[in-house]
Length: 444
Image (tube, rainbow, N blue to C red):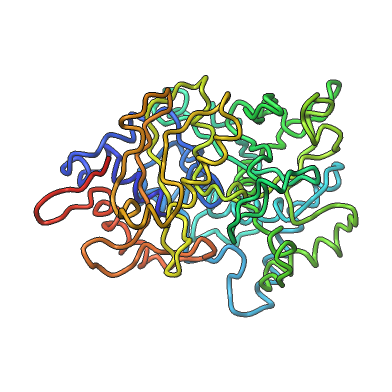
């Protein structure tokens, strides 16, 4: 939500932003990347034909059964009611919707079930009136690769969308694991990029891609299509369910229902159902540690400690010169960003300096805090003599001017009241400009 609010403040279609002098910066962007919950924003925006941010979040004034109906954040992702029977029935319906994938010979995991509920919030075909109508497809059949046919993409009227996911691997090098409570995979694990044309990694241990429309294919003789369901791709980038195993914690009831139903209806004892599984198209790659695996095991794109989807934009061959880095993570006790994600990106780039470039940033959250660098838009790389891009850092670092905290919404929230979102909206323009009575603070 924080990223959507900041980009709304940069949108040339927002009259308030135009009046403030910052509207239109979004229209200059070549790429728009997202991971974890940010994939819901980037994915829904791209497939909905790049509507204004308020239309995306709250839905259009004219409801179209085939179009996008808004995020409907007041409806929980899984628990539609405090009545456990309602939750059980809803999740059971989601599991039934993915049984065809299992019948086709593919493993089904929590990501598939998540995808079906995400489709009701972040893919065309659902609105508040038909949310529980089981006779509708609710976005089934809309693929990530089909975005190339959408008018705003074909006419270069929207940024190129990129989503990210991390790799879970038994071959991981745990010596480069961040010492943080929210880091679950090493920084050296390959990061996979998913875009409308292809899926793969620029990391030197792989440096290979497969066409997105053939995702699900694992050999050169049979090509799979329609595996790249839009909602499944969003779920691939934001599937955190594996952390309950890693932390040895009991999951919330609704998630436990998914585990139980998958075990009962689609029993696959050897399948790690808490992860996303994709047939491995990179079998036999010489330097890829997972080249002998039947499936790629993928998890939430933030599990290596990088909460911002910067990595694809740091690829040297892309020659990106400026990055707006929006940090909506919540590491502090009151759920604001402390800059850890920025530091994690710097640490990862240091592992692969031949492929990525990044300007110098402070090495600890305490340094960022002491200089108030999470409280204002901050420029990194102004005086850098390297080819690294200029990074303009916007952190959800706390309310300005002593105003009440509204934007510190937990990343683990599965529903947000509409009235809170409407209260948040004006705050993002204030956060973007950070106006003070006597001056604006843009730190470099």
